[in-house]
Length: 84
Image 1 (tube, helix red, strand yellow):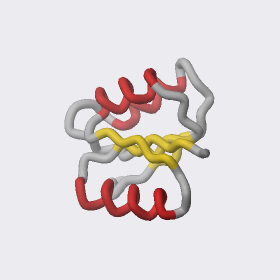
Image 2 (cartoon, one colour):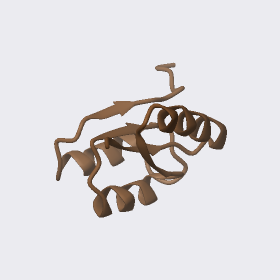
Image 3 (tube, helix red, strand yellow):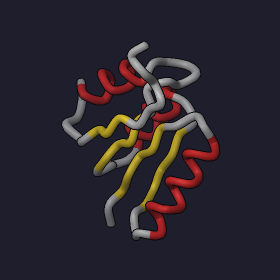
Image 4 (spheres, helix red, strand yellow):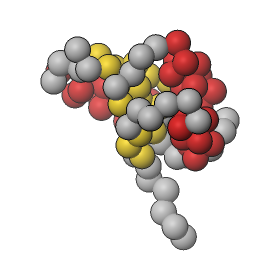
């Protein structure tokens, strides 16, 4: 089974996407902030990370850097952030 880690602080987005992915047969681990996301990432083998950039505690960019320093797991950025 493919295991995904979804790091997203918006409950509606996180729960809706989690349900959709589970309906497709994926195991979904989730976290509501960057620090807990890094803890879940360190404690589990994941095949893919879905990462929001705008997290309440630390930047999604920092989370990405931390993950990339120890792993080559694919990371897909999911965000509402704009460049303005």
